[in-house]
Image (tube, rainbow, N blue to C red; front, side, top):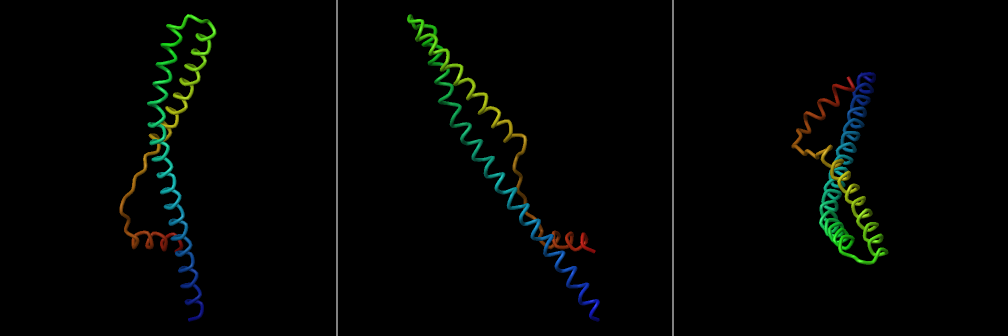
Length: 118
């Protein structure tokens, strides 16, 4: 009887540990999804002003008569385009790992945890 109780207690502890691991994994996934959403939003917000900077610096370069102004306009355009590439790389990272949330049957999770520990 004592050995059966100890075994039951061990199984219960293992199941609780598995549930805690799954909760932590879910929490981490939710944090990553939130970061992805934030990154996507920030990236989109940055793209519009960067496009304006690129366009205006290109125009300035084309129509400026002063050579020094042309050089500076080109540097601004190059820097803005670099920022645009960085933003696009952020967006591609977010798109590679779309967040998917779904309802989960906790009873099924507990049964699976118990099967793992058996």
